[in-house]
Length: 120
Image (cartoon, rainbow, N blue to C red; front, top):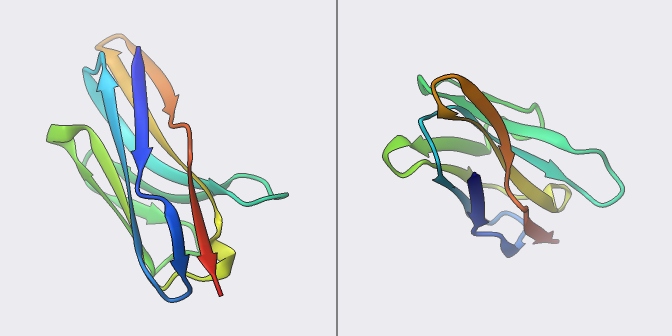
């Protein structure tokens, strides 16, 4: 079993910054990619950013240039640095990791979500 625990959400004023963290624990052989998604009230879940095992990244159009994803492989942790936040960034943020608990299987793991609220 693999568990993802997120932290770092909260209330921030427009223009401010927040850093989210998501740590994986349990049976982990390797982690293929790590990602962040978000879901605002009444909207579908939206892709935010992803980082591969080689460090390559890609971002959703709405966050490019403002958000930065990074990972610490030794800690099985992914981060999301969010700058220049706007009210439309208000959402529950979820981390996702594609985890190999052993060499022959893969598990799509999700965190419980952390709320980020941006006030105008």
